[in-house]
Structure formats: structure tokens, C-alpha cells
Amino acid sequence: MVGLGSRARMYTRALATTHRDSGRLVAFCDTNQTRMRAHNAILADLDHDPVPAYSPDEFTEMLRREDVHEVVVCSVDHTHAHYISAALEAGCDVVTEKPMTSDIEGCRRILDAQRRTGRRVSVAFNYRFNPVHTALRDLLASGAIGDIGSVHFEWLLDLRHGADYFRRWHRDKRNSGGLLVHKSSHHFDLVNWWLGTGPTSVFAWGDLFFYGEANGRRRKLAADYQRAHGEAGAERDPFALHLADSPDLVALYLDAEHEDGYQRDRNVFGSDITIEDDMSVLVRYESGAKLSYHLVAYSPWEGYRVAFTGSEGRVELDVVENPYTEPGRTDRTPVRGMPAPKESTTATLTLRRHWEPPREIPVAVGEGSHGGGDVRMLASLFGGADGAAPADHEDGARALLTGLAANASIASGAPVRIADLLGE
Image (tube, rainbow, N blue to C red):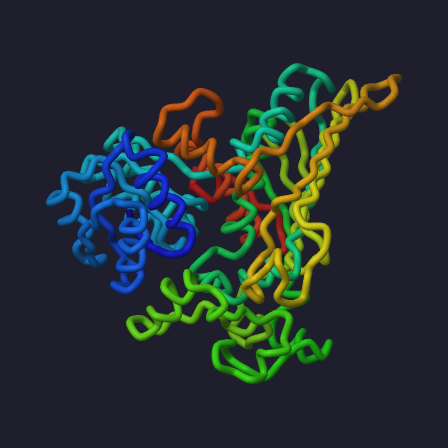
């Protein structure tokens, strides 16, 4: 495993417990020794032997020395292409967190390496494995609304979850590609998967409307601190993350700062934010279908709405993941500033065929994170379980290219053809 931040804990725990018989965890690689020690502490708590810890400049040597067959990539987005291509060239298969990478050069590098080596790249789009999304895909594939002409997709991140991207390394577009790459790749992959097609052209607008220094000062939301830990100005700020509330965050980040200076709890109204928080995207697909998509990162509630309109009717999915945002420490959110767990997610799937009354299609939200998507994805990645197949390198590229084309359109003010990005 390379990249030992918070998300990587899911893989560490899975490979030490539920999927221990599927493969042997043999090594960690990260820029930070403290984080690797924290993951080895997780292994110790699970009665698993510690594994060797390697620095990034030892990555290829690690693959050879530890006889690695598969690499799990959870590092900062802009580094994905380096680790994925190096692993492929060394004869390894790869599981990578989304997005597959964060820029067009990295995308070309991965596709070229996969073409040369024939090795497998699986992109961890866990929302494919949410049973509600599977039910929607089955309904569309059955022809229930005929040929699909349009898709409307609105995704709302609440004031805890949305703000978290503006505290972390994601706030610098050079690291993450912005939310249209880091976050929306989930959603663009879902649309590609639901429609069974890929994008051809994209137009987009995007702004930093809510977060950032100018917005915070204009609306009198900004507190005067650079990072929250140890700062009196952060105590009453509902946007502040309090790392000391969580032993896990202390071990992974606060205790690790002395090595690389990375601060997990930056002020969301800081001056160095280069990503957008409000984005509108239009996409045309190979099938002729058109998508209107909107993402905001400052909503009072969290969830999403997606609707497909076809030649014989319409399907609507409404999901509420968090009905409102609580400002302080509560039973649901014991760590001040962290997003609330989505334990009470509700989903309504409605079929509206022409000339017929609407009919609600029964759906059940899965247990666990991402509507049960994580558990099912891990079973597919490591256990060979039946059901949805993991996204591959082509799926990863299609989702990534939609976001990159949207970024390019925001910058130029003009539509962008997907083929032009790849130079085809």
C-alpha cells in the first residue's frame, strides 16, 4: 500500500481481517514514517504482524524485495500516475483510489503503461457497489423509460463534508485537480455506468463562491487563524476541525506534522485556496444523451438527486445522507468539524412512465459507508465476489476526462471535446 492517510485505513483493516485469506499485506510506502507506524499500530490491534515501511524513493525496490503482486494506491491524487505506472511496469496489478490521477499527462502515462504491460488497473469507484445505484442501473437497462435523452444530476455537500476539502491538500488544484476531478469523478463514472456510454464534449462554469478569504471576510464568516489546532480563534468557529478530539486523527496527522509540515486543519477561509466550490457542467455522450450536473460544497444538507428522462418516461432518485449540519460536538459528531456519519441515509426511487401514475420502486440502502458500497467493493476487489465489476483503466479515464474537460472549459469559457484532450 502506498499513501497511508485516513482513507487507506479501510484497506489496511480489510487486508488484516475480512480479506486476510485473499492476499497478504506485505509492505507500506509513504512520505511519512509516523503515518506508517500508525497503520502498523492498526495491524497490531488486529493481531496482524507489522509490515516493512518504505519511503517513496524505495518504491520500485520495495516491489522487488517484497515480491509484490498488487499495489493499492491511496496517495495524494497528483502522485497516482507515478505509482500506478511504476507498479504496472514492474509487473504488478493496481487498485487505485479515485480519481485515477489528476491531470491529462498522468492519464496518458497510465494508459500507455497499461497498454504496454497488459496489467490490470482497478479504480475504487465505490458508489457503483451501492445497492440503490445498482437497482437504478438495472431499471434503466430494462428499458423502463425507453431511450434516454437527458440526465439531471445535483450533488450537495454539507457544511461539514464540503468544508473538509478546503482544509486539506485538496484545496490546491495542483494536488487534486479540484472537486470536478477529485469528487465529481465518482458522479461522472456513475453516469457513464448507468448510461453504458462515454462523454464526447463538455461545457462548464465554476466559482469559489463560499469558501476562501475574500468570501469569508465579505460575509463575516472568517475567523482569524491559519490552522485550528491550538488557536483560540478556532474554538467558536463551526468550520474548524479539532484534530485533538480524535485519537486516530492525532496519530495520522497531528503527531506526523514534524516530518513534513502537513496541516490537516487549515482555515477554510484562507487565502491560498485555488479550487472551486460551486460548479455547473453540461456533458454530451456518445449515445446522444445530455447531462446537466451541479455540485455545491456549502449546502445545509447532504445528498443528491438524479433524474433520467427517456422516450417512454422518467426515473427519479432522491437520496438524503444528512438532513442538516450540526455546528458543534454531538453524539453523532464527537469530533468537532468532521462530517457526520451517514447512518440514516434514505433513498426514494420513482418510476414515472408516460400515461401512467408514478410508481415507487423499493430500494434498500446498504449498511456501512457509502451506502454499503465500500464493503461490496472490497469483496469484489479482493474476494472475487459476484455483482458489479470494479471500474477499470478505461472507466477511470472516462470519468477523469470529464472533470478535466470541465476544468478546461471553465478556464477557456468554451466547450471542450474529450478527443481533443487526448490529442486524438
